[in-house]
Length: 277
Ligand SMILES: [Zn+2]
Image 1 (cartoon, rainbow, N blue to C red):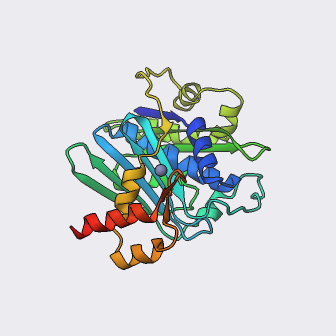
Image 2: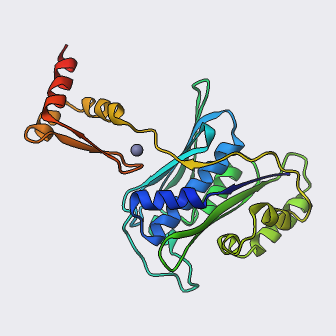
Image 3: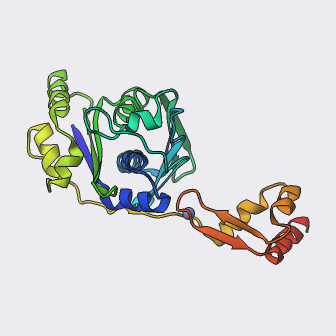
């Protein structure tokens, strides 16, 4: 078997701060970021892994991207949506995301090849949806646990996840045993908040000592910058640019990190001149 774990507290907290996200939106962002990190660690040839979830729930579309070097970023349509807790006291991530739609994965390899796969959402909780994607689309029987704990102060306190995969040739007995122990693993995020390590939790689930490869670091990092934002602006139809910028210039806001880039009427004028040339 093969086990991958991702410790994502810092990343999930940065995403929450960037988007000023409510607890339930922060949990959705954190879980999807964790899924992207796990997938990127699994597919080493990928330069970019992008997961998009649109379940038609109140928070809207959620997207997470993982790039080489553990660089992660995410966006969500309605980060301020807040919902009552479920009856078991957990955040209502499934409700917020919705389950009427797809879990879509795009992997871009270093050689430029692009792979896409998608499955129907199971419940919008992201963990089971991700497991379903692995099993159906990548055809690797997998058990997945993703968890984000939001503290009483409304900030992300713990986040992480793991994937356990049966490799070809493993007996169904072993796989079923792991699935069973997985279902009994109590809230992964609580265990992380209590100070347990993911390595410890994984060994508990698998029931044996594991040999770990050296870890790689993850960070919340957005690729946007001023000149890319200007290029984006330039891609709009000319009349639209005129309309947007005629009086005081324009502000382009990145959906992944919420950085705002301001362009003066002069800068836009020069852009339009260049486009005309
Ligand atoms: Zn950005």
